[in-house]
Image: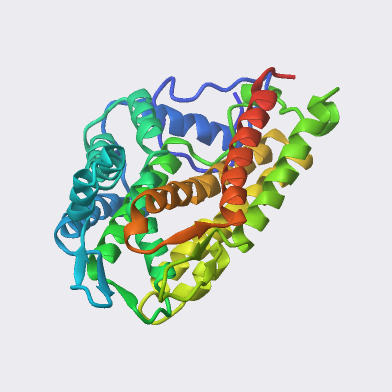
Length: 377
């Protein structure tokens, strides 16, 4: 029996099995202990401690803010020689439905109104009710990737605010509803991250898993040796270009013909009334996508032991979860379909670069994962 130098909680017989053949370390024993505790009967809430005690409160606040966001308006639009218009989440759905844009109406209804409550319900079930770790992971895997799409309407509002910035004959003002909704969605995303961290502890894996070594660039042959680096470099290049090159230009009579890129959108929103939304653009559309692409390249080209590589891949997953260029791209599509009645615009090259950056990033991620996990060494 291998002796430990740290004080562990009292174990029952069979909690941890020591394997002299694999020479298990203290951290690995702790990993097995945590897995055994997670698999024991009981809910996550019963074993919560420290920061995890905040999870029920975060879920409650997210639910309340979502309810408020359904009642309080999002946006006020003042147009020359026209009456003031107030927009809210339900009003956006009704507007799309009456315009016979049924697909967009259902999209906003599903992602921005129904799904936030579904996600809060699922996360609450995982935390308070479920006693099976397999069920928790299965449910979290289904709702976690979809959470960011609830911000679709937020990005549509951001686009409208940017295009009406410093215009004489039209102006827009964000109302409190947009901030309640933004806070609600970010809180639910954070809770999903907390629970994910609890279900997948960031500590050493079991010794048997150490025998699996990820394939590196130097271990690939033929076309595989060049396809991943090429896709990654193309992804970074299109991402940088999409951030800087304009995607839309105003083309309406009596309005200034400004052009806007993602970075210029951040600058336009960096004002006392909209500075919080400018941070949304800065972090979700610029910083997190760039960090995610950069981290992917470091993980791919670098030489790491399996433990550090696994943690690096977890970091890339975290950054990708908070990168929302794909949501912004869908918001642009929604605006191009519905927004012409408000502001006439012309498509600029940046829109195609943005589409390309989203597509290349998706293809490179799928290809890299296939090559990495296709066979153990």
